[in-house]
Length: 367
Image 1: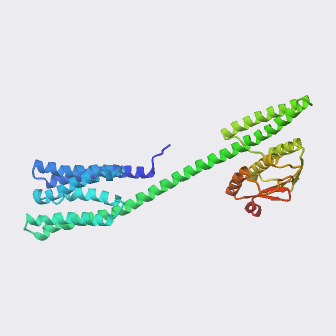
Image 2: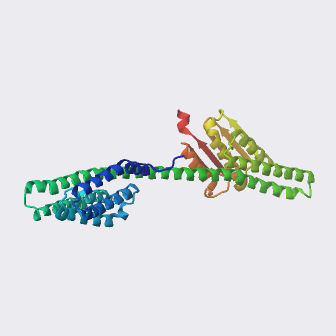
Image 3: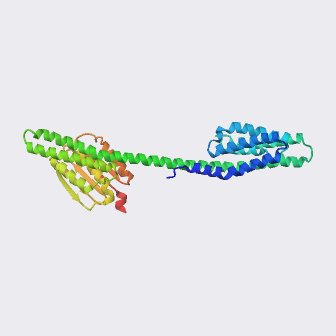
């Protein structure tokens, strides 16, 4: 799979497209302005510094070489004006400056104006050594270099903004991917809690019951131990299915499991089915039922439980709730967020010894 960032692809494309053209331009500068071999060497240094800056710009690291490349190319331009007599050597300082200025963290406009002023000012020094055809010299050494620099700089600023937008989009996609991973981890942790937390509590209850029965009803104690063994085996299977993304929580199975657990604990259960539960809501409603069953067995002294099911909702009412303020139920608090993420609502109420847990998807009911 291709994982190279879009920004990197664009920079590599620029390097592939423009490096050959700039190389040819640098060769033309040296060939047209140099009169001797040593002038060719000096002008070549300016071209080399400009190409180094371009390569580092394509890699997104132009500021690391900005100062040395600017020093070299800025020195070559007055050498060409005063000694070699060539008007093309502004190529180096104009190219490096155009790459560096838009990357500056602040005062980019002032830096751009300074670059244009430097190129024009150095070009005007040509009049110190040449007094013939003043207009022609000004045109070749001042007006044309300054105009080209201004135009290219004007194009590089939007180019920089374009790269910034691409970078922001990449960072946004990375953040979304990280959030998706976090959400999946939270979902996995919640499902793991649903499976193992529920099972461990039931095992605790059945183990306590077996300990009481071992001396007075050995056969019943063996039956409880057998159920514990089967429950643990089933939990191991569900955990493996969860790890391999094969687990699908079944509301009917959870309903039967809750009924068996309540009856084993001596709690009477009544199930009202007003309509068949929609499969899309079944998974989350099954989680609500499982977590509520665990809470009733753990926190309440219930004698009766009523479960009401409709197409998009579930209501679970039990008596024997503790008197006092609403207890903190972390499992239901986590489920409330998961239900809300799917457009539903989960509420809990405690009043006069009754505890009500209700989950519904009103928006889907209306549609």
